[in-house]
Amino acid sequence: MPDLFDEPRLAINRVYTKRGDAGETSLAGGQRRPKDDLRVEAYGVVDELNAFTGLALQTCIECAHAAPALSELSAILLRVQHELFNAGSILATLPEDVHPHQARITSAETAQLEHEMDRMNAGLPPLRSFVLPGGSRLNAELHICRTVCRRAERVAVTLARSESVHSEASNEIIRYLNRLSDAFFVWSRWATQRLGAAEVLWQPNRASSQALP
Image 1 (cartoon, rainbow, N blue to C red):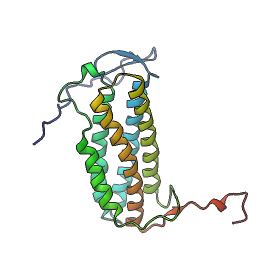
Image 2: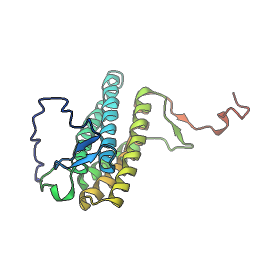
Image 3: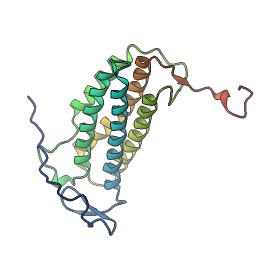
Image 4: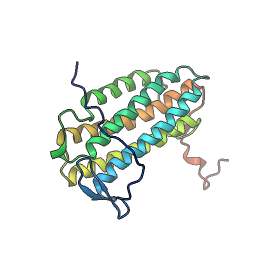
């Protein structure tokens, strides 16, 4: 059995502290950084992705009565939310402050995404064009997750190149986000199939400059 991550050790008694009124915030180790600092942006975008994942999860739960197979995706999305919080924990911590059992992304998380993608993609028809977000609300929300995940990946790459980051954890986060964005794409197609909806395929000649209606 792998070593477990440390459980959270915090008590949130007040929602606001006024310490951020001057445009600064605290990292996990207590260091103050401007709120537009690249490290803050990195874990901030991961937090944004977590919120959109929660939205897609809720839609998935609400659609499960019509498509019970979606309960499998609901469980995956909930797990991903916890994993994203683990990623944010490392991004918010300077390398010298990282604890041995601090929550983080490992190769196991990335491998699990690959396993799920391979299995769920196996039953999908091959694509003959690019897919546009739509066809169902859940599909569109999963595509939003995909694009925000790509942004999180870009910021994480920039952070790793420009500032000291816990190297092993940073590399795993980048690999995980890269794989996760692909997973959101597969999940969007898989969910659309389970819902019995039609995929929206890119048609270049649907542009207003062309003759097609």
